Length: 335
Ligand code: SF4
Image (cartoon, rainbow, N blue to C red):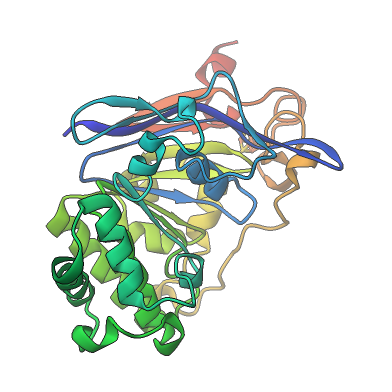
């Protein structure tokens, strides 16, 4: 299984009225063909900005750092330097939609309200697969069938507003998958849905991923969802990845106090009487990033004189797990 996407040292800054802010700082992650990477963090952690950088969907005021590298291996085996692609370049259009699909929390971000679902899916099929007319329509109906939409031959002619929230979400998945992408980026795709529909959509996505052999990056604030869908997980806080590793290992032996807090906040049926312990406090703005460790303003284990002065280095813990926290910094323990 080869590496499909490799992001190295990604830094994203925005010029604002209040000066330069850097919501993503030195982030590295990757995903292998057919695997799922979960990126978890609160809103403001930089998870969506990071993946929008991969799709080159950031606003013009955004600047990606010179040392950042975003490399994608296309279906012909060629390595594409995504950061170097010109806006509007053919290779970028092929990458978006064709090689990498994206779905969002709000399906109306993907659909235009003035065209039918079918027209929009057929347009993607025409662009990326070169099919037209009846062949494109047949494939659109097939995609709607795949995502479990009832009566797809009739639904294909409906407008987005005529579908329920759960059905719109399914139609958006059909739209994203209709070009046969090798990587699907799903940005909080189930957050707006009620719990039953959420479980159905998660099941559907896991099934489609298995059937199509597609890789996925699943972005969410909910570590419970990550546990269901991901192979690997990256925990983001204030623009950096604070912990990363195989999902089972990380959930069993979380090393970072923030990850430990997120796990403690997952509701569990076997501990129904226990109070949930959310991480206290709020994530600071990227323009007010604390010195030293970004999590120190909320960390009950912060080491005075260390965590407020020095950003924690990356420590590899074995088994593919790594953490940025002075509690695990072996160099500090030795010194
Ligand atoms: Fe807490 Fe210090 Fe570890 Fe940051 S480096 S998470 S402040 S113990």
